[in-house]
Image (cartoon, rainbow, N blue to C red; front, top):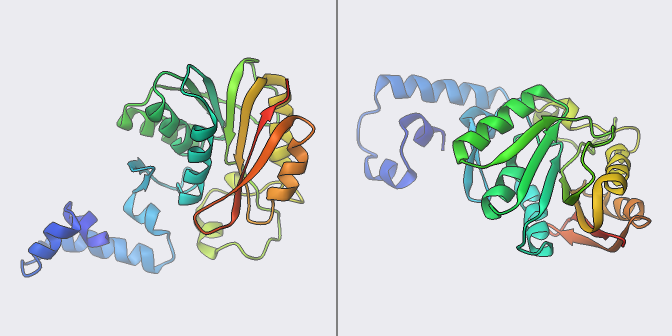
Length: 250
């Protein structure tokens, strides 16, 4: 993958030219990538781009790496929300992969994304421009009220790691932004905040859907039950309880 990236070609073409001499500039670029990977930097950051929902997103340390787990959230929400004009907000957008994917899959919807990090908003805006998505971005602390009160869909992959959690990969802790990782003493701080935001800004019958850590789905469901009906827990491709989805009570 790194060699293809350095040469700017796909794997089939690389194999077809396997006996060709590697240009010096490409070799040096490849070696720099290998050195970064050997130092522990995630492959996605070394390459500078990564696929999400079949599209290439710019990927760097300004935001979390787009992961297949999050595709489960987007897919579940798309299935739960009818194909009619919706007002959608991705809270804590990071790279913008959720909101941008939604906008491209449902161009008739009014899609917005917000984050507390100006760096993340810069990356999300860059991805929106490159992929041709019409998404409004704005700065927002998810622990403070939203200006609008008429959303029909709220989506989020919030910070959910509790301080002291021991099963987090070293490369995640070393390279990915801690602002997007850690959430209070029990890891549920931002789910409580999202429930408050939904109570204020999600219309009755609207969908609230979030990604959560591998041991958190039951706790998140309990937080959403006073507000939402039909709260579901959905599993990712590895069979882990990854998404909690419900509809605001009418």
